[in-house]
Image (cartoon, rainbow, N blue to C red):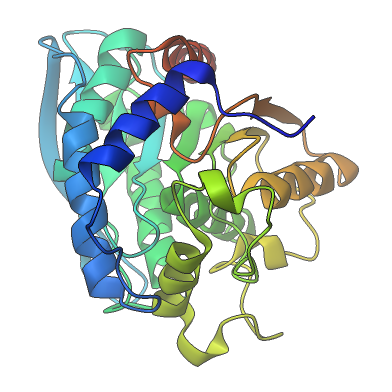
Length: 315
């Protein structure tokens, strides 16, 4: 029997496909066109996030490795002070997304968990390439470490979280944290984009791909240019290239069984475990990429959200 889409998600995706019939997808390699269409899709999805009235925000700035100012946003729920915190790296396939765009989702995580989030507006490809996004994300980690006392954060309870492209950037930042002697409590990677070599279609996954192989080529090529898939790609930019995961932060990895990132996520989890790094891996039946956002009001989305809140709350 072949793998099947979750039945509720299949209905939602069929309706979305019918609504977009006749609209041509961005051409392979056109990062700016993909940025525009992906941004519009995310805006539509985030419009369905319930309000989070108890969440407050404060803006800060970190300084990245090259001296560039990196905007940060600190999210808290009321007067809660759980002493843990999450550095959050938004998704967007390396080429799109922002803290403003992901704001409804960030507020929801904080509303439900009570755990403060520090969201980082890292620089995007194609304007900024190679390891720059991960360096920006690591700058946010360093900033939180330096400001932990005044924010009431326990240095031993700082975790990192990222989804999709942000999961890949976040995993790169976790590698930088290890290299710089910063011990994270956990890395929470939601269908992370880890491997720049994953651009040739798998016939079993391509028909239900919500983030397609062409999209994946476009995102990775925007980040790496002609270095794409070469032996010299650094692991900080594409974490699947990491030779030795020993000493990385314990991980939680979630991916759908119909996501084109499935195999690279499973392999990353296997390599973490082999290196003695604790890893909780969830492969969600019937789920394509972004199953939690596409299925937000559905059973599959609710189950995914409950698992995330459990992991966030346990930091």
